[in-house]
Amino acid sequence: MSNDLGAGDDDGGSIVGGRYRLLGRIGGGDAGRVWRGWDEVAEREVAVKEPRLPGEPGDEVYRRAAHRLYREARAAARVEHPGAVVIHDVVAEGEDELPWIVMELVEGESLAEVIGRGALGVAEAARVGGVLLGALRAAHAVGIVHRDVRPANVLLGADGRVVLTDFGIAHGYGDETPAGELEFAAPEWLAGEHAGPESDLWSLGVLLYAAVEGASPFLRPTAEETRAAVLAGETAEPRHAGELAPLLQGLLVTDPGARLDADEVEKVLHALSGSRPEGTAERTGARRVVAREETQETRVEMETPARRRPFPLSLFFG
Image (tube, rainbow, N blue to C red; front, side, top):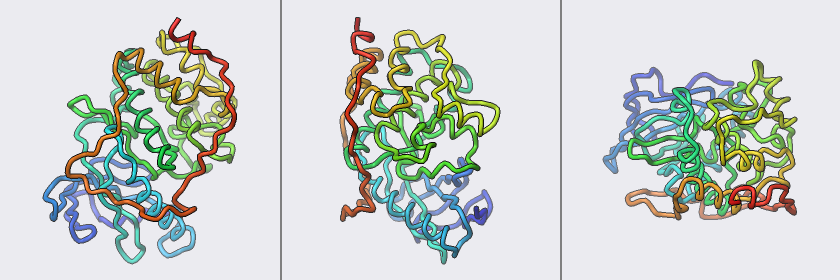
């Protein structure tokens, strides 16, 4: 995997796409780096993601990954929901045409940082989960499966806003994937099968478990052990989930077709949080990059198998 990211040092100063000046790094990890930037045309602050791709610039693996990322980031810009980060632009930069993703800048901290200081109460976890579910349903409605729902990809704004990031930017989980990412991945994806909307619901269930318990039920000392725990669905009984426990049980089912569906999950989360679902809303001033032609490459199969409901809603509402 190439480590030669185009922006140079962490002090920034470079201009991407002829208009986005990098001001300084604000985050990063194995998947790349995120910069605070300034849009010199729109005159506003933005977040700019500089992805890290497999392979080396110029080789076939790198080119295919760059093409896929560019395509999926453009498709993800179609997701419209208050809980989904706004993608302003996707810029292919440099001789290797690395796709940089320009997004709205959300001031706040990640859910992972918050959980690191202490678990959430059931009502607050349900509120956060309800917003995330709404964002995921908006994505699923336009054929996007997130595939990387985890606390590190959830931002909590100072104003209480909940924002899911990295739509369409998730990567495959290979043998070198850290255990901290595997613990939120759906078992069917780790098994090399199709990842659909049910896969995102599994990951949401793991996230909610971590929110109220302080840690994922699947994290083990090694990536191999974590993968095995996910594939087997090995979870410890939650101690602090309260009325959220039946929902977690209904989501963390290894058979995708047997999981609670989104309608059922929505009813429970909003009952526990006392809030109403957040509808789709257009953000003022957001310039969306939309893939105007829906091709086979930009669509994700949304076929859903027949469902079983082993966890009736009476468990939640009495």
